[in-house]
Image (cartoon, rainbow, N blue to C red; front, side, top):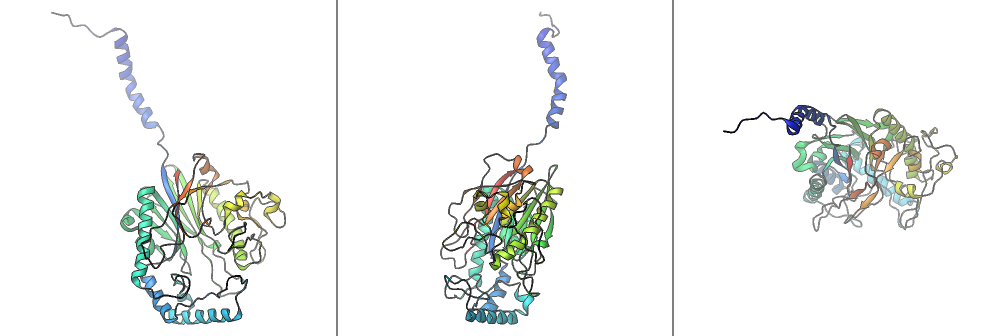
Length: 413
């Protein structure tokens, strides 16, 4: 019979060391920091998106006024509308307001030409608008399912109701908020509760400047909207903007004239008056949350501005140092000429996420952007890019799904 021996020697020592070290290895494993969260973030201008009920109300009014245009029409090549065109537009405003129940109610429906094709107006139906909503729903579904998007900033929406409609089968997973506004168009967020159970939304009303500060009845442009979420031990802020349109580019275009922000054109004067509130908002957010994303429809080719060789002395018309918030005049205007260089003034570096692809996209380009704060950008790969995704549209669809494509990026938080 073989004698049983107690384990001894090097093998025994190694085994004993492994047994004793196991709890410590497990503790080390538990103490390791979790892998950084990666989530898709998108911005989507949905082109006068309201609920089905919003459309039906608008269509009933607009049928009666033959889908007239409340803005004076300008013929190609005209710098200003004729007196006759101005009078036609004024009559359209008066008729629309009367049928809607007053100016405040009229402001909350889309203009009569919002869903019309170019040329002679056509008779649109509830089914036509339902097709637009279906296209929006399918486009948002693609963002969520195929691209892993978990935070979406929306522009040109009426309310949270339409956001819930276009979330479709994902609606129970997402929280939604919008910025209350006196006009139809506003901004909104939707975010997956798996990212953050408790998001905090806050409206930035300072961006909602009036079109004409000398007219007490002038309409206000869209406010901003912030979404603050807690991802692990980090607070992330998302700033959703839809700035004034009509002053977009610094490079001449066959259709659009190149304009700096101190251009006397009416649209540029409004966008100019949004500069100081925008920079002040960004500065205030940065003090509370260094990690932030500024995204939305800028209505400005900040990529063109970034690519231009603009020295600090050129940023403002008076040659002053562009660092810090520019001092507004009595009417709110500032001496700023270039939006990107004003915001990215060195005191708080920002990084535009470049666009890698816009395959299949039609409509506006260069207006929708995603910008990261310096600290957040530092945690991203050097080759970080964003993508535009074509909207879903059925053959023969009479109301376009949107004239913008959603732009998205995968961020490491």
